[in-house]
Every structure is written in structure tokens, then in C-alpha cells.
Amino acid sequence: MTHQTKNEIHNSLIQGEQTPVEIIEEYLKRIEAQESEMHTFIEVTGESCLNEAKQVPKPITKEIVEDTPFVGIPVGIKDNINVKGFKTTAASKILENHISVYDATVVRKIKNAGGLIIGKTNMDEFAMGSSTETSCFYPTKNPINTKYTPGGSSGGSAASVRAGHCTVSLGSDTGGSVRQPASFCGVVGIRPTYGLVSRYGMLSFCSSLDQIGTIANDVDDAFSLLEVISGYDPKDSTSVNIEYQDLKEPEEISTFGICNEIEKLYIDPFVHDMYKKVIAILLKNFKKENHWLDNLDKAMAAYHIIADSEASSNLARYDGVRYGLQISGESSQEAYIKTRTQGFGAEVKRRILLGTYILSEEIEGSYYKQALCAKEKITEKLDQIFSSCQFMVIPTSLKLPFKFGERNDPLDMYYSDYLTIPSAIAGMPSVTIPVGCNENGFSAGIQIMGPKFSEKVLHSVAKLIEGELK
Ligand code: GLN
Image (cartoon, rainbow, N blue to C red; front, side, top):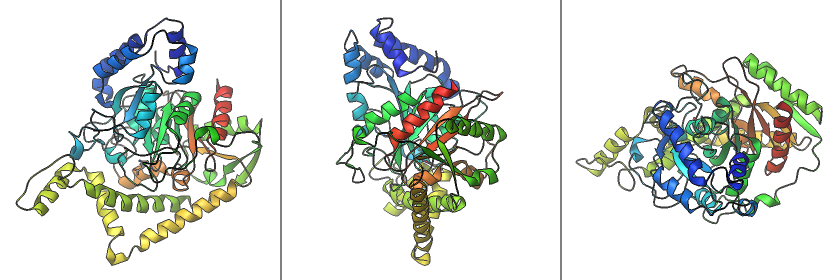
């Protein structure tokens, strides 16, 4: 019974066909049967989730569902987001035994909305990667075909939804880490506007870009979870004082944009066909405009300069004194070196080294400043595009899922985010939806991007496409 939606579960609960405990038992059974191969989770909450399910009010009524929209729904949380009493490892040896002492704001909100946390999902170490292969524990398998990666870094969050190990999940998206794995696993994934969702209680990678996003089997579930976790939080200084209900209503959507560069890039033929299919659907309802995004390659370079610089600074806190792994040495310097040498994996070290170099006095921050200029230019360009159209459509990933070990060259891996980075560095929202199904069972992810705070517009467009594809 995969691909279950929140509505399906609620209908079954309201009609008394199943109890919340039975629902959770069913999910846990499926996890137990598949987890040794699939590895969607780092930790499953098991008993605790069942106990929570026992507390759900009975009988469940429509009113209860209205008040607590995630009542009885199993939710997966990426392992870089704190859930009190459970591990938060960010899939790193340096935090292997770290237990969270508090709930992240998003987790508190999900619990208040009745959601039941079923597990902490696997990921690339500190969210650096595009395949979950950098997790220090194990890679997650793609449920569609286990020879393939589920994408990353929120690979566990996307795979767990697709495999029916949870109904919805949270991931984090710095440059594409919600959307790329969602597209690889054939599910829906949203990166919200920067500042709409609090990051209090999320482990920082690149603070100026990190956002928490949602993953679900359908468009409504993904946006419903986003609505629950959105809103101002004084505990996150980048949080914007706006509530989801106050976002712009999708009243006048007349025009969408496409990006001319897409035709010049090498795109998997199936992805290209599905992209064309979506454009054909949109043309029945809206006018089309052609735009040049320019600077797509510069966006990727700028992203890595900014992300590595901030990562080198953010990860300095893992010093063997305050959190996690602690290896002693003759001096504090030696202890620091030993802890970080053993605690971090190769990709994380590569980024810390690059980031430290970029910020070093030797080059006086010139790369960093240039990257910020590129970020500004890309944002200006997108602002200009969105002054004449209400949304844009582009593929999520240039290629379909790849097999384990297929992308050994880090640069090759970095290209996975080529089309997800622009909206990330502009702080703009984007949703990926699965389109079609090829002979191997894979869908193409197609992104709908919009200007800041256009989530409701994206919701209605994504829903329209989803409806047409049924
Ligand atoms: N795959 C990208 C990276 O490795 C994006 C990561 C992310 O969004 N967290 O940096």
C-alpha cells in the first residue's frame, strides 16, 4: 500500500476502518521488512511512535482533522533536524551518538498538528551530496530500483515517502537537496521561499541558503505540510514575519516562462519529452514567454563558493569539546585535529578545506565577493523575469537517476544541482512534481519556480498539472 496520501489515511480513520495504532503498525511492519536493504532511516522511533499513536483522540472526526491536519500521519524527519530524545547525526561520525535535547520549531509544529514522527531519515553527510553515498552509515536505495541512488542529500526523506515508510517527510534544500531526490524517487518536493520556514533546530550547512522543505506523494500533501511548518519564529533571525495564510492568492495567473538555455543543454531525452508534455498542458491555460536565464554555469560556481565558505565556518563548532565525537590528544590542538580527522568524511573535508581557502587572507575574499555578485545578478534576472510572468517551468534534473558509484568525480556530482541552484541562490520557491514513467519506472521531475512568497501560485499550478496527468 505505497503512495498513500494523508486524505486516504484520514478517510480510513474517520470511517473507523483502521485505528491510528493499526496505521503505524502497518508502516513499521513495512519498514522492518525492507529497511535492511533500503536504509531509508538512520533511526526509527518505533515504540515511541506507537505510544504517540495510542494518544490520538478517538474517534477521529472531520473537525479533529481540520484542527490538527496531520493527526495520525507518520512523518519522516531528515537527520539534520532535531527531534527531542532521538539521535541527530547529520549522517556524520562526528555526531554518531548525539541525542537531541529539544525539538526544532518545524518538529514542534508538526507534533502540534497531530503528526507522528516515525523516524530520522538518512542523508548525505551534513547535507553535502546528491546521492546519500556520503552518509557515514550506508547509502539509501532508490525504492523504484535498488541499483540506483535516490538522489540527495535528502535521499532518505524522498525514498521513505516513495517506499511507504512514512506518508510525508521533511528534507533540507540548500542547492537542490529536496527537489533532486524527490525527482529521483518520483514524488513531490518543495523548497519554500527563504525565511518562510524557521530553521531553529536544524544543523546549519550554508546558513544564507539552507531551507527546510517538504516531500509527499501528492501536491496537496506537500503544500499542506508546508503550511503547517511555515510562519514567523523569533528564534530564527532570518525568519520572515509572514504567515502562510497571508501569502499572495493565485488569482491572476496568465503567463508562464520557459528558459531558452534548456534547449542548449544535454538533457535526458525522456526528461525532455516530459518537459514538453508539461509545457503543452500549460499552454492550454496560460500564455508562454521565452526567457534567457543566463549565468546558469555561474550560478553553480557561485553556489559552491558560498556553500563551502559558510560550511567551513558553520562546521567549526564540531571541535570535540562541545558536541559529539571526542578524541583526546596530548594537546587541545591535537585532540581537535584527531577528532575532526576521524569524525568527518571525505566530501565534508573537501568542502571545509575549499571554504577555508576561499575565505583565507591570502586571497582576501575575492572569490566570495564575486560569488555574492553573481548571486545578486541571478536574483535580479529572476526578478525581472517574474515581473512579466507569474511562474517558470524547467526540468529539476538534467538526467534521470544514476547507479551507485557511477558519479565518482565530485564535479560530475555537483552538476546534479545545475537546474535547482538558481532558485536556491535567489531565495525563491520551487516545487518539483513527477511526470510520466519510463520503462524502468522512473519519472521525470519538472520544477515550477516562482518569485518570493508565490507558494500558493505554485500550489495551484502544480495541482493543475498533476490533475491533467492523471
Ligand atoms: N547537492 C548539493 C550539494 O552537495 C546541494 C546540497 C543541499 O541542497 N543540501 O551541495
